[in-house]
Amino acid sequence: MSTNVLEMAETVALLMTAGKGILAADESTVTIEKRFKVLDVVCTEETRRDYRALLFSAPGLGAFISGVILFKETLKQNATSGASLPHLLRAQGIVTGIKVDKGTLAQAGFPGETVTQGLDGLADRLAEYKHLGARFAKWRAVFTIGADTPTPQAIAMNAHALACYAALCQEQGLVPIVEPEILMDGDHTLATCARVTEDVLHAVFHALHRQRVALEHMLLKPNMIVPGAAFPGQATPGQVAAATLECLRRTVPAAVPGIVFLSGGQTETDATANLNAINSPPAKQPWVLSFSYGRALQAPVLEKWRGEGANTAVAQQALLKRARLNSAARDGKYTLAMEQ
Image (cartoon, rainbow, N blue to C red; front, side, top):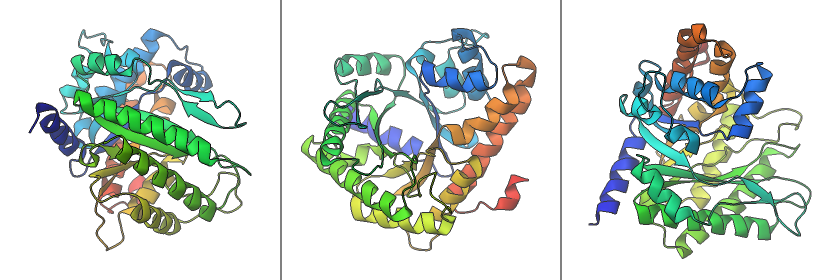
């Protein structure tokens, strides 16, 4: 068995550790600037470093978080203490990951649709990131539900890019997280989200097969099946769980070891309650069902921090609370009373 295979198997096992999930802290500079602006925090390299150091040094975070996805800037930054930000994670037994796509571009000839870029030079970048300590990576494709979208062409192009990225990761011994996201934007129904998600996941796994990606050494990061944010009347956690599990059983091979859901614009409590419902049915699923949340873990942290060093401890407690509650939800043991 090759060294790369052994490395990837170990990384998957660590990321899927019982009771733990993944923190997505891979916001691009443009995205994190938008979040800072809402709180009147100036976005500089230093403030981004300080905020992420706050996250990674939260005492006890490793009890609930198995891995963190970083933005490329963060992989090379040092905290004010002198320790590198990845070292703060390793000190808590947390595995370092890296976002490697370069965002989306409008897809020529297909109004309203995008394709994710970043394959050019990716092999060299992956080798560098692995040298810097990354053990897994993430690539995100985005789909919007509209009157005529997503088209089969947009689905096929993004599925192909996801599969090429995953194959390049495994060649370097990095575990790929494959993220095809159906956005919540719009007024579509739960059933429409289920239909589109099923179409996308079928295409993604066909593409992964064509690129000879080892399913045992990857993770899937999909959206849950939810109605559009503008749809009148939202689904209950039970409805979300039933639709999500039905879709996954129809599309995701049992060889995939884990599914780590994105929160995708859900509120913190909705993301936790829906994850809990997904893990509550008595029927055992073939995959570990966990989380890879960004805003659903970070929103209360940013609100408490607001760029002030004096708020570090209370902001870290906000992070630990959400991480602990999602850890409980991963085992179907979350209750609303735990929010108090």
